[in-house]
Image 1 (cartoon, rainbow over the protein chains, first blue to last red):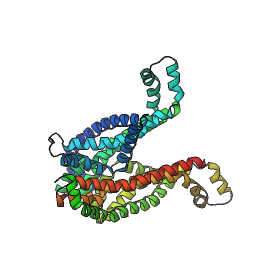
Image 2: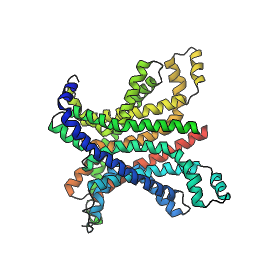
Image 3: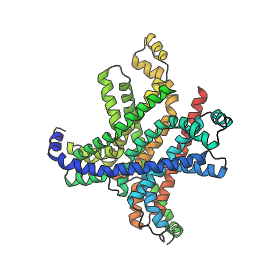
Image 4: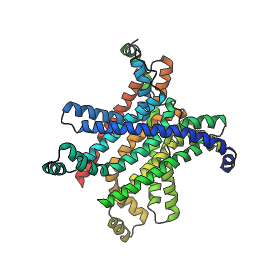
Length: 227
Length: 221
């Protein structure tokens, strides 16, 4: 434990730039899968509250499966299974990055769908009825009345999801994406310094996720006082 | 061969092989759960302590373990600890790693449960001459359990799903065997889908149970 500062003093000028370079990939996966998750989440949430029984059942299945499977299993299924089921198609576009973004996005979609649904359902029905009786169109009442209030409810859980997602991107190393964990593994084992390197990586993750979690907490406090 | 031909020929072999990984998966999950339940309570009690010297290390622990991925924590324990002269087995490293990670999350469940009990309960217990520890043990925690049970069940599901990453440090659980089967038979689709179905068979009923406990708790109040 005592030699750690010395190891860092000798090696950090090599390790840190390389790890920071790889962490760009982590941020890239996180960003794109967040967008995919939000899109999936909104679509599935709308299906979940649909009046059509079949659509609703499909949405429930998507949510149950997406939340019930370990993320690693989702990543493996998304990345390895489709090319094998449909070998006739052209799969050259399907990189490990695409697989990672889709896999994390599907998992996130299932989580966010429930968040969005609770946001929509938390609003009293009267809000919408009042907007309509004032002569607003359904679309207008959605944009000016429902969404602004629902956003306030769902923002903290969405923020918490984003923090979890940032950490979950580390799993993409298991399907071979060249993100920070992958870089760390190659440095750790070529330099025979696993402890020092992995603690440094933990520090980098912490530096990325902690500001985000402070932000979410500040947001939670502000929204609570606003209510 | 098509998907169904492979399944017909090797399906039973895949099934029995994957099934033989469940003891390891369940050992890691239950071991880490017990670790997290005990250690998480210690962290929670430190966090609500009035003494800063206890509160601050517990908060630092919580922030660090919730701010970094479980995979990194596992790697630090499994690959890093030998640098300091302690070589854990893959199973030990998995239980310690997921357990320490889980303790951070579970301590917040304890804290919310303890804080949901009215202050007067503690004051009443103390005024009856109980020590703070006795009051916690006989008065506060038994009442808090009802509030804590649904989130604890949800946490167990998360923990069970998290065990799917421990193959990366060499534990021979379900995913490790799935990967072995894939390299052995050069087919991936039926194997990973079957492994996924097995996880769902456990996690979906557990999620139903958690939802039911939550409804019961709300009905009680």
